[in-house]
Image (cartoon, rainbow, N blue to C red):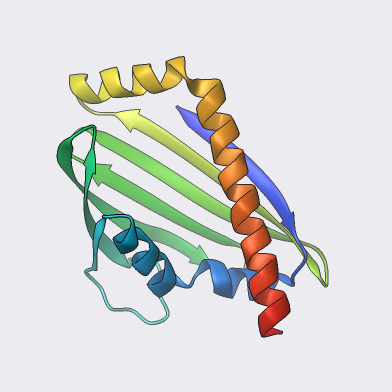
Length: 155
């Protein structure tokens, strides 16, 4: 199952990359949502090979997932691979400078099942695929507006 979305941001590519790579902020946001996040490697700034162990509840069950940044090309791309007991995912974040003050943020996410229960979960997600895609796009749009505001107030 794949999701893709993109948004244009009124900020220079280097600033957008720095805000997207602010993993301390994302870790705190995840913890506020009840996700236990622990960075295994303490690379600062995070580089390819940076790893996080996470634990969260999904459909009433505790789940563990390991996330590894497999690629980091400043300021153009980051790639993450996530693995859990039954599912794997790849997320690619691409940044493209449209002008000196405008950047296109593209996020591609793919999920694949490694077990029968995970296949059933993905199948149920596919039934609501249009809703998931719309929600994915809306969340990315909100994130893009937040980045613009952070840039305007910090620049």
